[in-house]
Image (tube, rainbow, N blue to C red; front, side, top):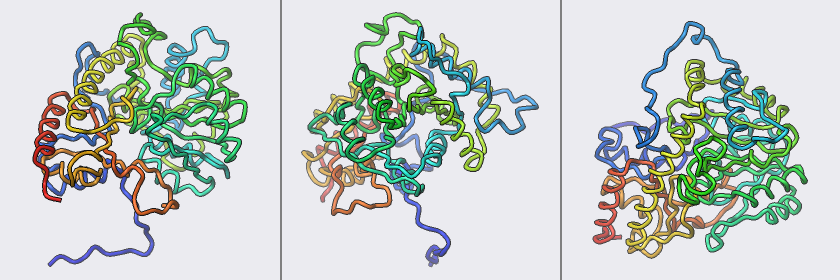
Length: 433
C-alpha cells in the first residue's frame, strides 16, 4: 500500500490553472501516454504545423558561441528594435511619437512578462474582468502590494464594457490600473476601433494604466481576410488591432501591451514574449526581471529577429485568419446543433465560450460536461476556471460561470472533426448522472 504524500509546513498549496488541471485529469486516463488518441479542446496553444499560405515553419536554430552567455534582462537590443519597428509599421505610420527599443522588454513567456508587471505595481486598486484568463487568478493573489477589484461582465450584454463604464469604474472604485485580455480569453470579445481609442483617452486623462494582454491580436474575424481595411498586403493594413494604434505619446500615455510568439506567430515553445510601453515603465519591468527570472533565451531571441520582417508577418497573419476563421465557423455550427448556446460569436482568439445549461444531465454544467467528455477522450475547460477570484475572497456555493465551457479550436481541423463527432455521440447518449 502506497503511503500518502507528505505535507510540508513550509509550503502552501498552489492551485493549477484551468488548462493544467484538465490535462492533469485527462492524463490519469491515458492522455499523457497516448496524446494522439485524444482531442484536446482545452489547449491554450494554436496548431503549430504548416498552414496554407503561411511561411515555412522554423525547424532549427543556430547557436553562436556568444549565445551561450546570458541575454540582457530586458532582451537583445536588436530584437527590441525589431518589436518596436513592427508596432510602428502596423499601427503608428505617420504619427510623431514612435516606439523605440527602450519601449520594449523581452521575457521568457507571457506569464513571465505579466509577473514582471505585477511585481512593478504599487499599492493601488487593480481592476480585472470576470470572466477572463485563468492564470490571472494566482498572479493577482501572490503579489500583496495592490488590491484586485473584480468587474463582472454580463453575457446578455455580449460582455460589453464601454469607455464610459471604464470612467465610472476608475472614478468610483479608484482604479489605478486595469488588466485584461483583448481579444478576451475565453469569450472572444474584442474592444477595437473608436471604442478602444476612447478607452485609451480615458486611461490617459484619468491616469489609469491599461495592461493589455494582446496575445490574440492577430486572430481577428471582423470582416473577411483580404477585404476592407486589410485589402492590401502592406504591413500597416493588416486586419489586426492593438491599443498601440491609439496612443498619442508612447512615453506619456499609461498603456502597456503584452504579446509574443506564443499565439500570433504560433511558436509557443519558443517562450519569446514582450511588454511594450512607456520607457519609465519598461525600466521597472527590467528591474523586476533581474530578480524574478533573469531574462530569456539568448539563442531563441536572436533567431526570432528575422520573423519580424514584413513579408513574414503579413503571410503568417493572413494564413492564421483564414484557417482559424473556418475552424471557428465549423465548430460553432456543430456545437449549436447540439444545443450549446453562445452569448456572442467570438470576434477573436481561438476559443468558443459556450453555455451548456440546455444539454441533458450530467452535461448541463461545465464540470459535468468536462468529466463526461473525458470518456470520449475529449478535453474541455469548465467555465468556473475563468471566474478569476484571487485569494478566494469572493465566497459562494457555485461559480457564476458553472454552466459554461471553453472550447478551443486551436487544434487542427481533423482533430476538431473527431471531437465534434465524439460530442455528438455523447449528447445523443449521455452517461447516467
